[in-house]
Length: 139
Image (cartoon, rainbow, N blue to C red; front, side):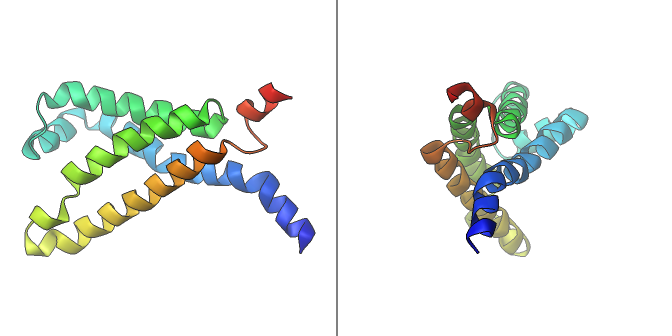
């Protein structure tokens, strides 16, 4: 059992960072691929100057995700993604203000994002783990 725990401690943080980053890579690339549609959706949710905020969202999502994947400045990358995810969750996945048919779907996204924010807080508190650029630079 101890050997299995050591393996998880060695590789787990890296795998966890990849899994968390993946959703933001997909989302950022999707926003690039459907820029006009995403800007229109953001405008429908009341976001002012949606094109400006969309460019910022793309930069935060892809930059933060790249930070997590590489394990470079992960606490800053996780903080950037946390700061991005919190207002996005409250504005875009406001399950309390949608039609009844959309409540469950939006609540699922809302709760998923809260879980992801918990992972960001964990990364901010404990760093990248052993397989990371951050850890190599300390050696």
